[in-house]
Image (cartoon, rainbow, N blue to C red):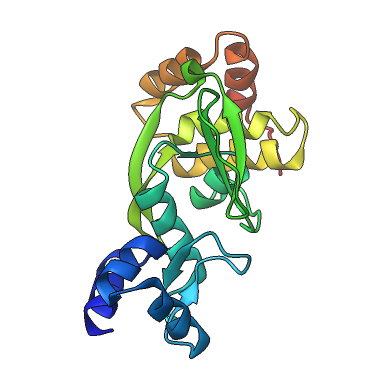
Length: 200
């Protein structure tokens, strides 16, 4: 157990196969769960385990980074991590190429054309100390737009982007980046962002 505990202190999560290798067999993994020395990363079980004292959110994002490297955090999850929204993160919203398949209770999955997955960063956040793939703050304005151009979520994202991410003296570069993200929506999003009376 000591070797497994050390592994989990560093990497936060492990799958059943690797845990079984460290412990000698898979039955020992199930026994440790039964006596509360290990816990499943998700209540319904997706074959991933962590220590009882590791925060659920940290374990889930660690699982995302380690075992699902093609996923990009998107939607309301990305907006919340950047503090562009106040949505509660129940399931992690991710985009994956539509050439792949993924379904489990840990993620809310959107399968999108590979050409739509761009402007991706790898970074950490408060409460998410492991690097995850996530769309840039600029791309997240388009993620917010998906929920309606007059929605409270979209208007709040614009306001907070202006307050927290728009750099004085560098606006032109950021506007250029926003324009390059989506040819159809660029005028709408830029106009809404620049407006001074956006309220949320």
